[in-house]
Length: 74
Image 1: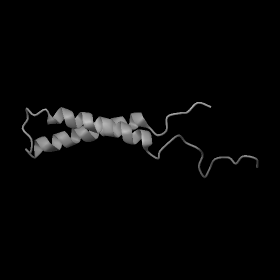
Image 2: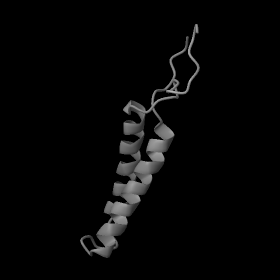
Image 3: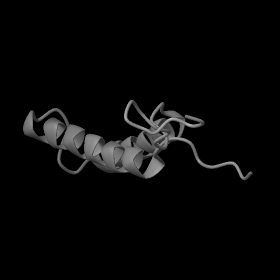
Image 4: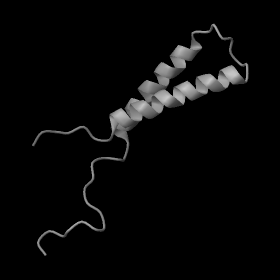
């Protein structure tokens, strides 16, 4: 059987993108970083990469059945 990707890397990437975006917006609002700084793009890119990596190794995989899943062999 082929090995499937574990976790949810696309969801992690989307969440990481928004995390980096909101951190950049917060730094702008609180005037901690000048507006012409390339740090904003780096934070968004870093958030995207970290989100994808956490999505790959995260504990949330495919649905394997829960409390209401039918039992096998019963």
